Length: 101
Image (cartoon, rainbow, N blue to C red; front, side):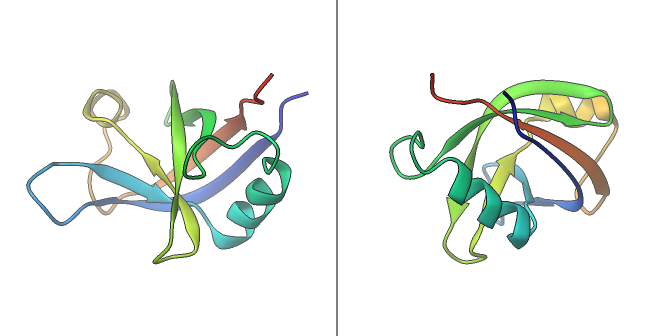
């Protein structure tokens, strides 16, 4: 069984030269994910997911962020380009948790 989450969030760029872009998951969604994935989280708390934004789907991991108390979803350039989204855009996100079977 796959657990799915849908939410709206703003795309932001990490403030350095790396070019990394992220979506911060809502705190309530992050709390649910933390509880659900306790048995199979990786290393420092990352969780494998299939993500979809503006019709573009990809597999990645979400990572805990101690500053926000939430998870961060990295959004690579190929996805941003194909989805025609940029820094500051509010995007609809669909996340499917990939269980550690």
